[in-house]
Length: 135
Image 1 (cartoon, rainbow, N blue to C red):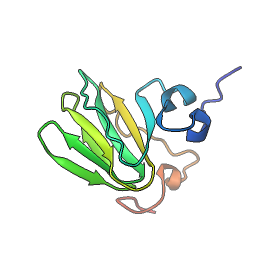
Image 2 (cartoon, helix red, strand yellow):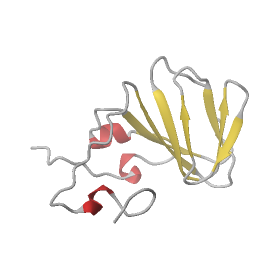
Image 3 (cartoon, rainbow, N blue to C red):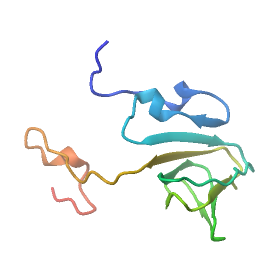
Image 4 (cartoon, rainbow, N blue to C red):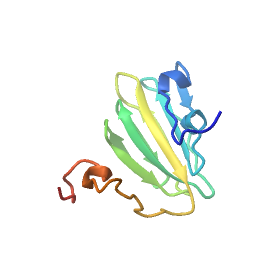
């Protein structure tokens, strides 16, 4: 079967219960790592770090406390984002009363840059207006 140039899935299709959802594997991402983690209320992860991989955490659902090797802690709610250097120790805890869902993207090697090209001259190809965009 030929790759049509895109892939579609959902967290529900990737598993059930608590733990990791392997987004990268499910949709064939090859340029970086990306997973979701479903965390029950009160659960506290272990602490980890990486040799090379910078990570960005996006809180999709719930309230999650991130703790760092320098002693700082921050609680993020839906829409909250935190970026962590590879060598920084980090862990998280679901401090809410409901399940939390955190999407984690990691990689190394740098940002490719803004390289989108509008198709058919449509200025909306890059997204909705606002935040620095002109219509």
